[in-house]
Image (tube, rainbow, N blue to C red; front, side, top):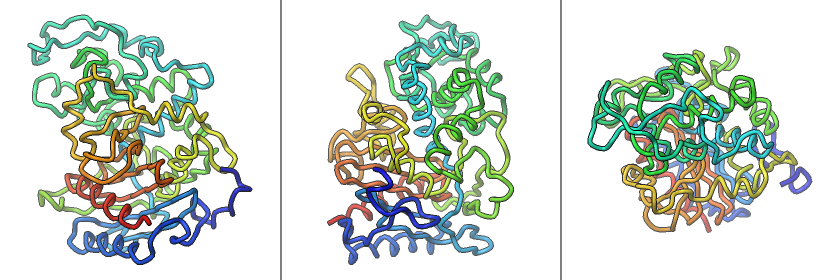
Length: 411
């Protein structure tokens, strides 16, 4: 897309606007979206949200729901800021691929080529629980940059049952709140991998490691690198790794009680800096900013005359990278990616069936544990961004609900 191809966006909006029906969005069906999401707010399952839908490069739907701060009953503004958690991962993946295009990073190169402190990581054998001092075996091959991007490095989060999981940080947020980047790598280097690299998909700290690879190659903090090379060029004005003081009034709040468990819940305050810019889950953004990022991917790497990635690089990123040699048992544990493959930083739909929700083959997406979600459907020329602070199990239901609501409105 170039600026001459269509009108410029209105102030505060990420793309040029168009009448929904001109984009193949049915005016008589779109109201179902607001009815369903407002019902979620009314039953205290959703504090508030911002939803944007673009098709054919133009914004056809932009609505807010509920409250920025449920306690104060502050209406949700369209420019509300959210902690996007794991939706940081696609941003960092694009940052690494930009270095690859510049000849400074190779996707199939061992991670230790850039972070030598990880060169001696061993592998936990299947018969061991990974307790401290338990025997380990040598890796059959080194974990690569691709392994970090597609979650096949043998790393994990600390969310499993055996002793080795208990030794891993439970989340990117916890790791970056506790340690500096150097300290995090030292902690990781002392642990064994769960599996032989390339043998199993498991959601992991791999993108946090990738962010530190970027820092090592670029010679600057991850936040600065992304600002200079991605956020700035794409005019993602509210994307960063900490909410600045001037924007605190736009930072959304979560419900005080989990709507499923009825237990108290809280999100880490995004106005407090982490000890390192964690590539796995520490960014903050808005629906408008992320829509520009996602539209850039749908456009094949460019937006408004600014090229971020080459078309072939975007194809490479958003193609399934999991062959028959990769065990997908843990991927299939996630209700919204059952039947998906995985590209670089994003899940990739293998067929129109399965997945627990309607979509197209080739659709790619990712989400955040805070309740944020986006997807790109190239077959439908469709981009959807949903921003909410609704953590917990309810977020899996909201993802299914959104697919049903948005796709039923397509003509």
